[in-house]
Image (cartoon, rainbow, N blue to C red; front, side):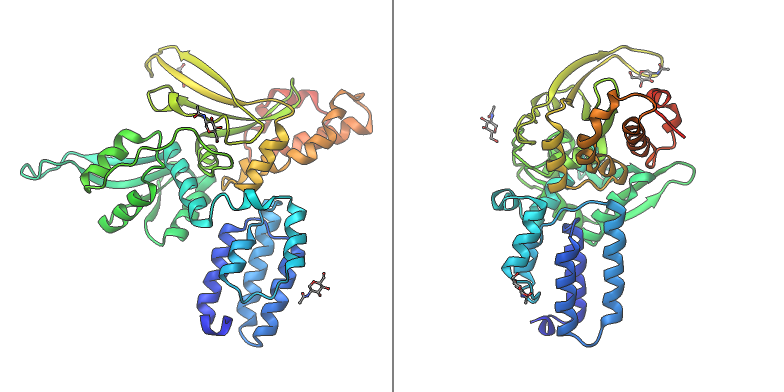
Length: 373
Ligand SMILES: *[C@@H]1O[C@H](CO)[C@@H](O)[C@H](O)[C@H]1NC(C)=O
Ligand SMILES: *[C@@H]1O[C@H](CO)[C@@H](O)[C@H](O)[C@H]1NC(C)=O
Ligand SMILES: *[C@@H]1O[C@H](CO)[C@@H](O)[C@H](O)[C@H]1NC(C)=O
């Protein structure tokens, strides 16, 4: 079966799997690898690179999101038996029901819709051709800080089109899609999933005579759309006074963001909704915002589970959420004596958490409360 697929196809299958499976466990992977080695005496060198790639990848993220099941079914060549798959999956702890909610393609496009609703843009321009009258969609773009450029490379690698350009003297990169066929392809895939950039998305649909599908604003359990929003506009923060890890999302208040219902996306964890008015100053006008705040101690486990199912591609945010489990074990040490071993453990944890890829950690006010050697 593998032989029929051809090596290259098999390698791209592996790449594809790596994309979808952000957490594979070694037990499972080693079976996968030995099965592969048995099938092929040759081509090992190339494969070993892939293996190292996976190892590095795992070490970097330090976490798992094992969704091998569907991939294994698709690439049935892999010699894993049910027991192995079961034990690996149980280890990660997802029920069959949750795993089957979204197939890997849906997972990607729902996530991408969240990315675009966060930091994307449908660049609609007036047509220069007076006779044509219709506006034009110049490009579909996503602009992100260089720190999160991996989000853009993931999109480009998945779609196999679009370009990434890095701004010269600014810390930003932009992914753009200019070709008509690619724009049409994307609009069709995202139709019914774009909820916030709706004005320009509707125009884009009409430019290509695509019938706009009204999205559902009641985001369903484990929908990857929310991960896309967090990857771009969300924040994972440490609230020292309340001794918890929180997840926040804030938008300008408008007819679209006010409809967004995130009550069900993380099972057992409803956000607190905060409406605020931001006062005008020289650089900005007065505006209203809507914030979704996931900020309870009990909610930390459901939050963690959501992001293990839908990993973030913003490395520093993902790092922060993957530490929740460890935090739950040691958070009680915040109240321990300053000179105790317990408080040292607590301080080490929090310091690691706030220092990770954060050039501004010294500005964090509660650092002064911690015990640093
Ligand atoms: C399948 O699972 C059983 C039970 O764990 C194990 O003993 C066996 O080695 C596995 N077979 C293969 C081919 O991996
Ligand atoms: C939103 O969807 C959930 C299921 O995910 C359902 O139970 C709930 O009633 C819906 N809420 C509204 C306001 O439609
Ligand atoms: C002006 O207001 C905006 C939005 O509230 C804020 O982000 C910005 O920092 C403010 N600028 C100054 C100079 O206060």
